[in-house]
Length: 162
Ligand SMILES: Cc1cc2nc3c(=O)[nH]c(=O)nc-3n(C[C@H](O)[C@H](O)[C@H](O)COP(=O)(O)O)c2cc1C
Image (cartoon, rainbow, N blue to C red; front, top):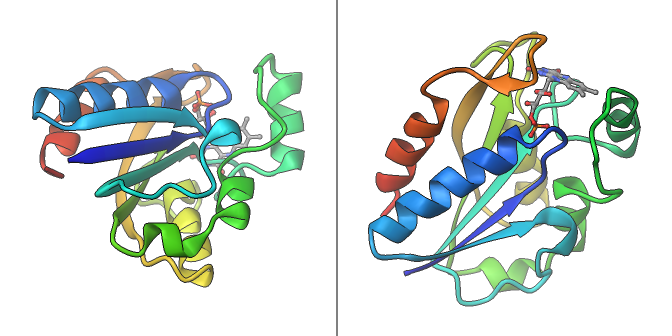
């Protein structure tokens, strides 16, 4: 099976989760490709599994404004990310793919913290791409680092997708 992982990351944590997912999928025999969202194909045909990951910003997907805030905090964030990738996507290309979104958050399943994955699922749905809400991975508040065990949890989750 071929898998594509489209990822946006400001401080590197969501990108690390994407790499952990890719390694786990590869171990299970899949061909897994990680693509930064600003360089991901808009016509991603031929992938049985497509995972879309982003950090939660202001309870949803990063926007140009939240990316500017992240830059002020020292992150190196490209101008475009998952929001723009979804907007430019050819929905036909994903007609036969299983599509799931994942994110990084400070608090899982919390109304206050929100979820970039939920937001991605809604936006994909509006583009005619049915997607499932996958896992949220935890960031230690104030530290801009993943909580211990989250890389392992990402690998375990990925292994269930094959
Ligand atoms: C501008 C900005 C807004 C944020 N808003 C939220 C939020 O609403 N909920 C939340 O759980 N985390 C929020 N965070 C923390 C991010 O979720 C955290 O920085 C991110 O998951 C780290 O992933 P990354 O290293 O891939 O950027 C915010 C961070 C930034 C920079």
